Amino acid sequence: MAPVQVRGEVLSIRRVGDYHALTLVAPGIAEHARPGHFVALAVGGEDTSMLLRRAFSIYRVQERGVYGGTVEIVFAVHGRGTAWLARCRPHDPVDVVGPLGRPFALPREAVTATLVGGGYGAAPLFSLAEQLRRRDCRVDFVLGAATESRLFGALEAKRMSTQVAITTEDGSLGERGRVTDVLPAMMARSGAEVVYACGPMGMLRAVTEIATAYGAHSQCAVEESMACGVGVCMSCVLPVVGDDGRTRMVRSCVEGPVFNGERVRWDAIGTVPPDTVGAPDDAAGGGHRP
Amino acid sequence: MTRMRITDGRPGSTPLPDLDMSTSLAGAELPSPVLTASGCAAAGRELDQFFDVTEIGAVVTKSIMLRPRAGRPTPRMAETPSGMLNSIGLQGPGIDAFLERDLAWLRRRGARAVVSIAGGTVDEYTKLAQRLRHVDGVTAVEVNISCPNVEDRGQVFACDRNAAATVVAAVRRATAPGVPVLAKLSPDVTDIVSIAESVVDAGADGLSMINTLLGMVVDTDTMRPALAGVTGGLSGPAIRPVAVRAVWQVHAALPEVPILGMGGIRTGLDALEFVLAGASAVSVGTVVFHDPAAPLRVAHELQRALGERGFGRFADAVGYAHRPLPPVAEPAAPDHQEAPVEEEA
Ligand SMILES: Cc1cc2nc3c(=O)[nH]c(=O)nc-3n(C[C@H](O)[C@H](O)[C@H](O)COP(=O)(O)OP(=O)(O)OC[C@H]3O[C@@H](n4cnc5c(N)ncnc54)[C@H](O)[C@@H]3O)c2cc1C
Ligand SMILES: Cc1cc2nc3c(=O)[nH]c(=O)nc-3n(C[C@H](O)[C@H](O)[C@H](O)COP(=O)(O)O)c2cc1C
Ligand code: FES
Image (tube, rainbow over all chains, first blue to last red; front, top):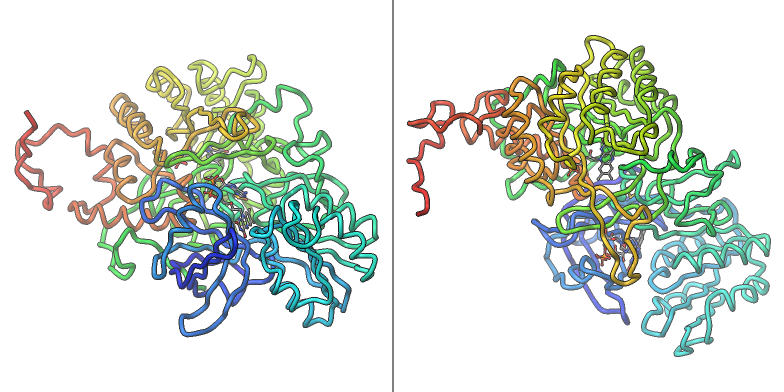
């Protein structure tokens, strides 16, 4: 379904630990949103000097209601744009483009799934869990963060799953450590066939390795820096192996953000591997300007 | 599909003034003077979700090379005040896939296509032009000469009169006679007029200006360059005055040469600046990343702005700012017959 651009409006904004949960009235987006889709928000108001949109996973949507469709995101203040969003108040206008990207692939049959979220990366996993449970899948959660205030959705995860494992790097909640410390045992207990993950690149790489070692399929939502979010600028690429076995620099905003983890060349992110289609074959070939 | 457009405060329902917006760009007849910019619209397909790409002047496609190209490592972009820096490195599928997929789509869709080409040698540019010669649906060829010449220690073609002229002459020779060739100029030169003269002498039918300015951002957290490619091209509203200046200077020196103006156009009034300075058409680039419907919105805003200033035809506004100050207000701009403002002492 094609994305739309709508002039949205803030319905509510609240603090959730270190994060902000922002609900926008954005008609036309909720109806077509699938778990793993994202929205791109214009920040800074009408004459903003921040030209590039900010991308956020969709946490949840409401198709109808008094206000028409709503979209909720969960975000951390990172730089100027997210600081501006955090200052938004009800009724403020926010221009929204979405739903964008390729969502999580859902299994055709009932499978056993483990959902792994790092920090705000947990946000898109709850609507996914709902969909999976509707398909009679067993759903377990592993949520991790640096510290308790950066864990998102621990209670919600408990409600929606068979088992939940929590990790924090400082041990403030759950086990001290990282999601990947507890993931193998979790998968072994449940016999997980699919792992869905969203979080920092390093986590996704480690999760894919564990999933692959267990013979499980992996679906990872990546976070690459994006200028347009709609597929026209080529800034959000990463090396991904295609069906033909060849590596290409692939746009994560339209062919992702969800990828089959085994297809992503995690170790080569930030480079153009020499065997990539169209990689420079000599030093001179690589020196072009934009 | 719901399409809501931001209209810089104007209600979207206001009818557009009745105005002839068609333009002739170096012989290419366009129904609208607003186009996309190379590298900011891919080949039109993605933006067609946000506005009807057949309604704008033309889609200017991402510079295409002979062979597939992977481009630069990431990070490839950094936001800057009212702009951005990019070092994409001309990632693209190569001319064969482009013709088969992208140009074919534009043709099926009924959109006009200005095809941008890029190469590392004169021979590559020539071969690209030859490939385009035998396909339908090429409204114009734009030659991106802001590429390093691999045969001359990576010197950028656009920064050298002779190298720029050699490429443009070769492309002009290889291109079908009825298809205009636009040379795209870089602002990173001491004297843009002399480069413009040189490529026009070499056969360019028109000029696209400006390409990005070379820039750099240092990330103060990592304390390293923000882009993997270290330097990148600066674009967006931040560069607009540089672009308007370049268009003004070249139009003053070569008033007969059609110009496709670009650099930071965000609104219809921004576009009008370029037109008054001498552009026969404009491209909207980086601002598309902010507002994916920008090209059509800018076209509508420009039409309103021209109407408000009393113009009956878009063509009458081209280069208007170069006219000597009239002793009394000219009939062409009846809305602005104010008494001359006294200059500040
Ligand atoms: C598909 C996707 C989903 C995301 N989901 C969420 C989410 O649910 N919650 C959340 O808090 N954050 C999310 N992010 C990251 C979020 O987009 C950035 O934190 C945000 O853009 C930073 O903007 P800023 O103005 O605060 O920071 P600045 O550093 O000032 O941003 C400058 C520029 O860099 C880009 N940028 C900077 N950091 C990132 C980053 N980590 N990822 C992508 N672009 C970046 C911005 O878009 C902007 O163009 C997601 C990113 C992507 C790509
Ligand atoms: C991400 C990006 C990619 C670009 N790629 C190309 C390109 O392939 N060929 C080209 O001639 N210009 C390219 N440009 C330059 C634009 O076409 C335009 O000349 C420049 O950005 C100034 O216009 P703007 O400020 O409206 O973007 C690119 C610009 C950007 C931002
Ligand atoms: S962000 Fe522009 S192509 Fe993906």
